[in-house]
Amino acid sequence: MHLKCPARKAEFVVRVAQIDAPEVHHGGFIHWPDQPYGKEALASLKTVCLGRKATMTLAGTKDKFGRTDAFVNCAGVDAGTWQIQNGAAWSYNAAKTSKYPSLLARAQTAHVGLWS
Image 1: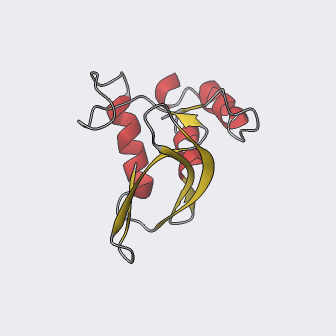
Image 2: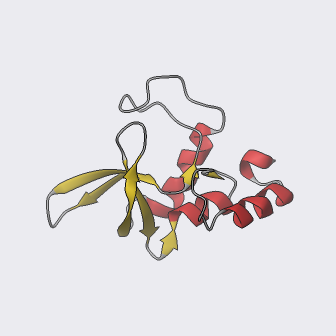
Image 3: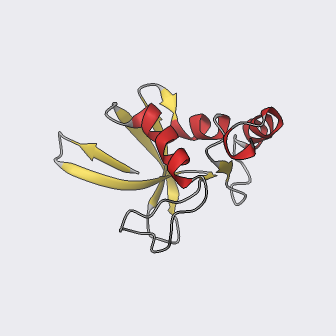
């Protein structure tokens, strides 16, 4: 995810912390074909975040591609929660303190998104 900060004339590349979603090839970090459901997952994230004011709280880690992990809030909506609830991502297993596993279980039970 790319977050732009007009006040600083800066752009930050972050990964939404504690979730994993199917990848879409952008010509940047990922160098393989789109994964199944990748375009739908990206569309879900755009629905909540594109063109909206976002804040991020750094998680203190980076992924294997060097992206900073951050909790992202778009116009009052937690992007990770949104993605999990809409079946567009799963909770990242390495995050033992993650708030997302129960949300993931609900999405799976409801057969939404990836689980439909």
